[in-house]
Structures are given as structure tokens and as C-alpha cells.
Amino acid sequence: MKPGLRTFTQLLAVLSLIQMSACSPAAPAGSDNAKGNTSSDSKGADNGQVVLQVMDWSDSVKSLRDEFHKKFMEKYPNIKIEYTQLTVDQFKNTVITAVKTNDAPDLFPVPTGMKLSTLVKDKWFQPLDPYIDDAFKNQFIDGTFQNGTTMVDGKIYSIPEAMSLPSTLVFYNKKLFREAGLDPEKPPATYAEFRDYAQKITAAGKGKYYGIIEGGKQSNRWLSTLREWSSLGGSGLNGNSPVSLATKQPTYDSQAVLDVFGLFKGLAKDGSFHPKTMSISAPEARALFAQDQAGFIIQGAWNVGVWNKDNPKLEYGVMAPPLPESGRKGSIPVTSSGAWIGLSANSKHPKEAALYLKEFYGGDFFQPKRVESGDSFSVVKGVNEKYAKAPQLKAYYDIVQNYGRMIPDPSVRNPDTAAVFSEFKDVHPDAGEILSAVVAGAMKDEKEALAQYSKQLGTAWNSAVEAAKGKGAKVSGADFEFPNWDPMKNYTSEDYKALK
Image (cartoon, rainbow, N blue to C red; front, side, top):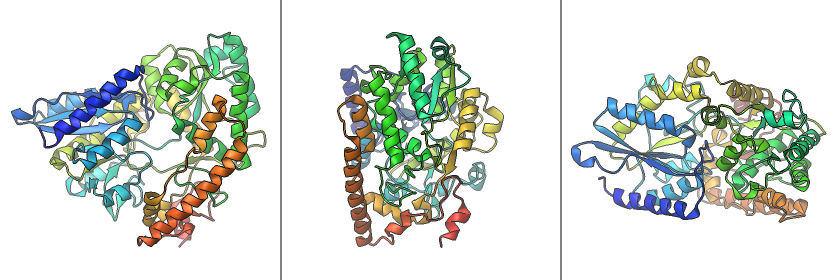
């Protein structure tokens, strides 16, 4: 057993007990996981095997991952994979503790909300370059490796999990559409139509099903929906920074944002939300949607693989987010495939970890099977074209091509911007938490709350910029402003160059 492994294992055991006491049902999930799982056991280190610890939150492909590990260990019997799967929130808290106590797994992703460059500076990860060759690097699609996302100072520290796609398109239940007298081939296009459809589905359900269901206890889902839907209305909000690309300020009280609030407030007033919405996670909501308990759910592409495998009788389609009555004034923000898995700076088995990555990305099993299952699109060249078969996944991709546009990334423009995020102290309740409160009926005046949040966010952001500058970072507020950004066009490498 590697040094510190017992402490790490005990920590996981405590988490398991907490989960059991919470009595929350298990459910598969892509990036919204509801349950932590550990495959393999801690035995085997005494027989000469290398125990390679891997941790992440990707349970939408749990069965494929287990099969991959089985095949890997059959091919390399000297390596034992100890794989731990947690929820997004569990992972972040667990890995922070593990790094502090020198118990970090060998391979693990960059936690959500944290920047790779900051973690490299804090010695969480070590570069992959000494253990991977050009043949391995060249198999990835263009743009996979670039400074500010997966690279730091010209060295590769992380590899994306999959091709980046927005996570707030709408899945709708065709069976319930028909029962409500709606045409399943004509999903709603506007806020007013969306609210009307949800109301009609709820009425037809008579308590058996409702217009819409969401994982209401996950504020991150509300925040993602608010940003991406309001961006279609011209808000300029996105996940790359708190600064709106449209206003060049942390503006969360624009008309586009208020329009989204108006829609969700109306849905709640109509009684269109499933009554369990505010007490369940996104994976639990997904499971209830698959049981024909709701007409709509806002989710990511990873659902396709789960539903097609576990719920083959589910009749569902994919639609773009509805538009405000004023029409489309922007696009869904699309980001470059960001940092995901990396090699622990303290790993005693970097060569074995690199071998794992080579099989995970370059082998003949996992990437083809993942794409074939409908879970996501691969960052490996040629895999999507050959193995993408699920019609819903193709539809999701096509909608993103139509409504999504690549947005600028401050980290690509100036890697020193990572120092600002290190200093930034988020403000709560944030916009997602405010939206959650409005839907739950716990808040009435969202306009005032959003104005106050925007003001406080601006103060916190300016303080972070000044603090970063005070510690030597060559950064300014202008690094987060992109005057040549067009909400209807992809932001390209040529656009970055034009700013210099």
C-alpha cells in the first residue's frame, strides 16, 4: 500500500457512510453525478503489482470504464487499477483534502471552478511531456493542447475528457407531447410557447407527470441554464469569467437575464415543475424524466448514452433552448475543450499513469465505445466520424453548431489571468442560487437581488484583479474585455492576434 493510502481510503469510507445515511437514491450521471463509487479493492499491492489510483466523477460511462479497466489489467497484469468515482461536489472536497495530506490519486481531473495554471503553481500536477510522445499528442483534434487551457508555459499538464459542448439544451418527451395534443416534431421555439407546452403537458398528466423537471438542489445547473439561455438573448454571460462579453462588466441584471427569470417564474406559477424538482439532483431528475414523469428537462449530451442504454423505450427528442419574444441576439457560449485529467505531482507511478492515458485515449476500446454509446464526442481524431451512431447525439451536436459560437478565453489571451481567479472570492447567493430561490417561491423580487449581486460581484472581481497585480501578476481588467467579440460568430485565433 502506497504511503498515505490508508488515510485516503478511510476518507472515502467516511464519504460512503455519509451517503448511506442521506438515503439518496443512486442514479447515473454525466457531469452531474449523484453517487460515488469505488471499483477494485485495496488488496494486491503485496504481490508485486503497481496500484494505480484514478479518481473522477464520470459515472455516465461507469460500465464502460469498468470494462476498460478489466481489459487494461488483463493486458498489463503488473498494474492494478483502483478507480474511485464521486459526485462533482464530493470530488472537489475530497481531492482538496487528499492533496493537502499528500494522499492524492495518481490521476485525477481539475476540479470545477479551479484553474489548471493555479493548480500547477500550487504543485498539484506534473507535466505529462516526459511520458508521452508526438504520436500520442498528434492523435488529438486541433486545439486540444494550448496554453491557458491544457498547457502551462508550453508544457502539457492535462487532457480533455471529451469534446466541449454546452450542457443546457432541452430534451423533450415525445410520448407526453402526443398525450397533451402537441406535435412531437414541432417543439416550442419561444419562451411563451415553452411555457404553454409545459402547462398543457401538466394538465394532461393529472398528477402523473408534469411539464418540466430539474435537479433543483444543484445550483450549478440553474446557473449554467441562466448563463447560456440569457446569452442567446444577448447577455454575453458565460463560464469563462464573471465579466459579460456584452457589457464588459459583471452584469447579471440585464433584460436578457430578467427574461429568463420571468420564464422560470411563470413555469413555477403555473405548477408546471415536477413537485420533486427542488429536492433532487440532476441525475435523479434525469431518471424520473426517463420514467415519463416530465415533458422537458434541461441537460447535457451525456444523457443520450445513459437513456439509450438504460431506457430503450423512452421516446425523446432534442431541441434548442427557446428564445425570448424579442428574438435571438446572441449565441450559446461554446468553450474550447478544457483541462480534465492530469498526473499528480506526487505520483510514484508516472509511467504507468501515462500508459493508462495512452490506452484510454489511443486504445481500440474506450473512445470508440464511448462515442458509439451516445455519451459524448471524442477529442481523438476520426473517432466521432466512425462511431457516432445515436441520432439524438447527432441532433444535439447539430443544434450546437447552429446556436453555439466559440467564445474568447481570457486564459488563452493572457495566462496570468489565472492569478485573478485564485484571488477571487465568489459572492453568494449567486445568480443560480437566486433563480433556484425564485422557482422555489422563497424569493419574490429577483430584480433587486440580481442588481445587488451584480454590484457585489463587480466589487469582488475588481478586488481580485488588484490583489493579483499586487502579487506580481501582469494582468488588468482589460484582459477580460474583448472589443472584437461578435456574439454571432466564432472567436478564432486570428481574433486573439488582432488584440495584440
